[in-house]
Amino acid sequence: MTQIFSESTWHLRQRVDSSEQIFLARHSRDLIAQLPVFEKEQRRNSANVVLKGKTLVLVHVHFRDLDHARFFFGDLVQQDRPDMVLVAGDVNSTIACALVAAKERIPIAHVEAGLRSFDRSMPEEINRILTDVLSDLLFTTEESANQNLANEGVAPDKVFFVGNLMIDSLRGNVENARKSDVLARLDATAKSYGLVTLHRPSNVDNPNHLFEVTGALSAIASELRLYWAVHPRTRVQLQAQKVALHANIRLTEPLSYLDFLWLMSNSSVVLTDSGGIQEETTALGIPCLTLRENTERPVTIEEGTNILAGTRKASILQAWEKTKSNPKAGRTPQYWDGSAASRSVDVLCKYFAQVRRG
Image 1 (cartoon, helix red, strand yellow):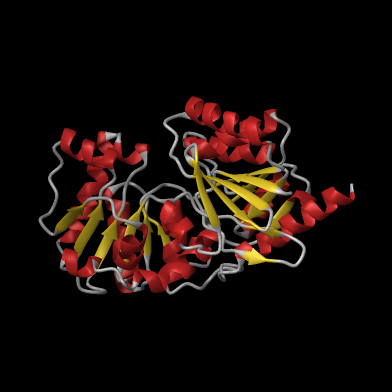
Image 2: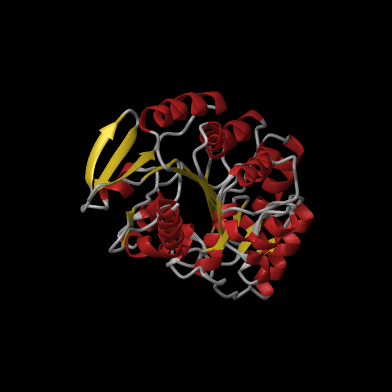
């Protein structure tokens, strides 16, 4: 029996093969519940998903810190001894679970491997680099990631350009998002507002940067209503620094995935420091101003709708003026077609078939 442990935050849609059946899903219980063919058993802060003898343990908790992640996941791994640990992205639980697997000599697959901002002041950059070093299979989302891994000496036969699993999730949930009443709740009119997210410590914990960014947002709000889904850490800093915002900026609590997806889909522009939202806006064809000095997802700029706006008021407003006069249309990058999960499962099936042959 093949077992894969996943701490992944991404949703990989099911794929059934005559010889192998491997199912991957997102943390959240609501997405697990969307898979009625599974027999579900809740166990120790995880979900055991069983189908025809194939088992995947889904860890859907957010770890407090690296030590908590290693303790919890280490206990889980030692008890059940999976054949592979699949991790996604660049958060602390990604590297923590990869470290556990490496020490237990369990193969690791990394989703979103090879992304590089080349800014080691970002904790996520360290997590990406270390996880890639430890991984046996590296699933990439864009050509820049393939090149980065080649430059770092990763063997080509470990790297698989499968596409973007998060875009699979987006495409699979757009229709469900249409059922959201978030526009009515917020009194928002489609294509007549901008959407804001801001959460990175470099932006919100540095008062100078926070005032630069919010100054730009207030200037933009004098022309366009902005809805800002406020991250808890950001709200704390806004209050602590007594930041005054333009009256046309509407602050909201964090939104559910489907509510946020529908609000984003109907926006005229998104301003964000999120890596994932850079990708989602490119897939949706929505202009995006990234409030950062760098990005680990250059394809969103080279082929997509993204503009790197920086973190200074002047540079953000310059990007805003450019977007107003000539919004980027962009195109969908290669393999962002909703089939990345199927390609990933193909790789996993071949891997386990080879393992069985010895």
